[in-house]
Length: 269
Image (cartoon, rainbow, N blue to C red; front, side, top):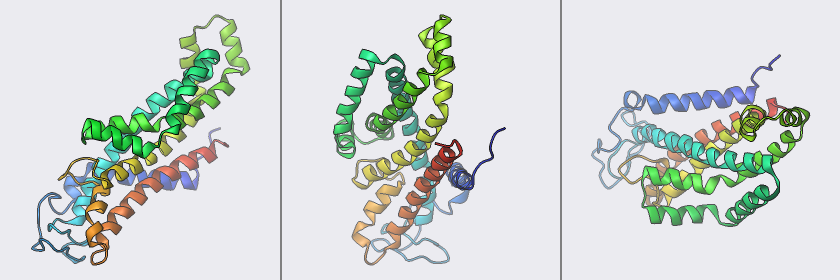
């Protein structure tokens, strides 16, 4: 009998679904165009008011509208980056854990080499080479974030591949492809779900960090990390410019982490 969702898992899932709704319905929810000046406060941020609940930035743009539209970029980068990360990490982890021997040594030594490289610095270097764009951000996030996934999946694959049903299937002449896809992968899938949720929160943070450093999605596209970077000069006189996008990042990361750890606890790991 399947166990019901835990409280942590339900809260995390509700937060993720709310984020998805906000991102999809951004044109309906945002009161103003996020890229146009809508307040006569050019050069000076406007405080929160009835017309602008989260205030306006130094260019007169509505902060609430920019945060709502920023959810689209953050969610797209987070999910797409997670898919790239999981594809690379799961493939390497499964192959290393299943074949072991020389394949395991080669793949894990390559993973260890990648782990020695500072992720953020490597991402900055790659973005600088590829030039900032949505596609380059996705590629970079995938290339620097797969190592932990590969190590965790490999450890689980090593354990599963030694169980009786795997030995029996191998004795019956099942091919390596069938063993991996029909027997190994389904038994590693719960762990992959957890890693996917946690990886999404990691990619959200990495995207925010790159945007804060000016290497994310180029303006005028709203981005939570870039909003914090643009608010740096006005932190003392207009702290809301950095506080609200910071809370948006916290909300998104917390939602995926709660779901991932809640799912992990329900699996008894």
